Image 1 (cartoon, rainbow, N blue to C red):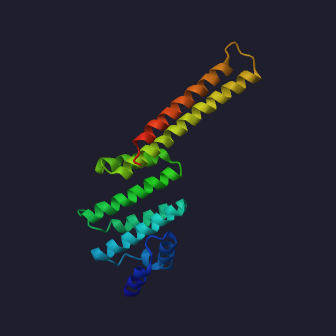
Image 2: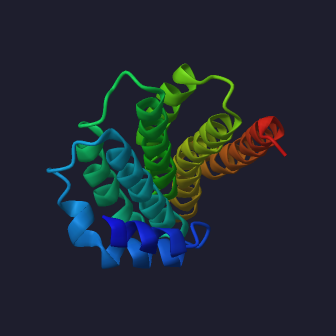
Image 3: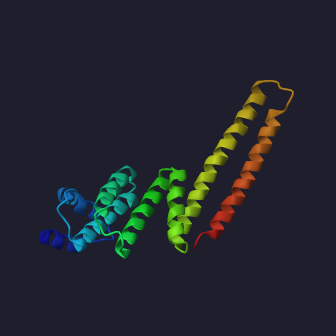
Length: 194
């Protein structure tokens, strides 16, 4: 571990590419941690695993983030659960998972995690901002469904002759959806921290 410690001190922990290179060049060590029982060593490795997973997120390697989080959780299970360090690490990995799900447009899964995190720490502004942004993503999905229905109604009216004016209804639906969507966007964005 001494050589690894020396190499870790040389890493610029603000540079995602360096973190990824460091982790992947020592992947064999980080994947074979069953023999480690020392709490401080476990904590150090977990922090490195978090930095690695977060760097993957920042570099938009979203498909690699989940396996990195899963590997870290295996190790996190060995960490003493009645400690502040455990709580902090657990929340960090949960938050990273929620952010990744959000960027993959899996808003419902992300929302569940963000709600859990806000119950744990209701005053955390980052959790709140991501929760609100994620909520906006959920609303966008609903609005897209309504817009699709409206377009179908307009196309049906153009293609067929109905006693009901589906085109007018569709145009009305588009207008309602547009204004409600813009209003919700403004309201949610006003709640976000500057």
